[in-house]
Length: 111
Length: 115
Image 1 (cartoon, rainbow over the protein chains, first blue to last red):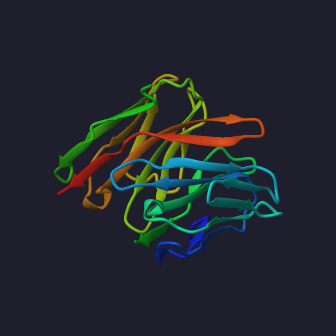
Image 2: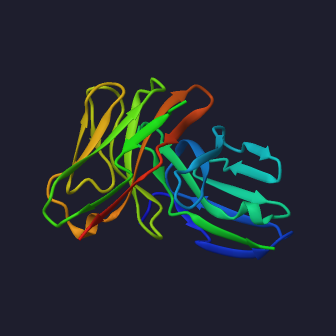
Image 3: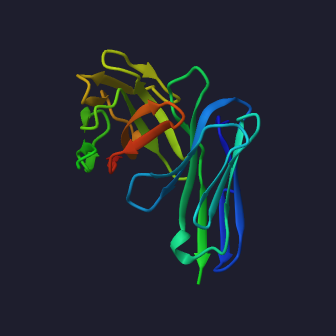
């Protein structure tokens, strides 16, 4: 079992729809990050959430950190084909230096 | 801005051969990491180095060794390659900033095939 469980694993939607992906753990994290990865490239940071209950917005993307700092969600409003990619959550547990990743959610937005 | 540079980009090995993946970062980061990425598995941590002179095992260290040569460089060695080590390998570095978390910067990846 992975330290960070992401769901769903795959998501295929039509342009204009809304979606939410989840990142859950039984461990407490000092912070959580969301990354987006395109084929043939390394992951690129989208956002970092640090405080329990924190909500951050990045244009059509809304990120939330759970109150207990064990989970996070990413909501995309009015998805566009350019949002297609692999979305990864990552974090280091409190007191640890090792950054762990979830298995990712592969999003496809059809025109 | 070079960021994180890793070499080689592509490599084909025969079972039992050895090789070293090289990684260097120019951001003066303390922490460096080696991950492997397989389909459906996300990125799994092989080894990490929290600071110069220290290394620690991650989730999947078996079959690998690492060296933190200096603050800039962190190499990954496969002593006797096995087909199960066919994967994409990413080197990364990070710095913990107060109230900003731990942002990781990745290299472009190394595609390794073991036949």
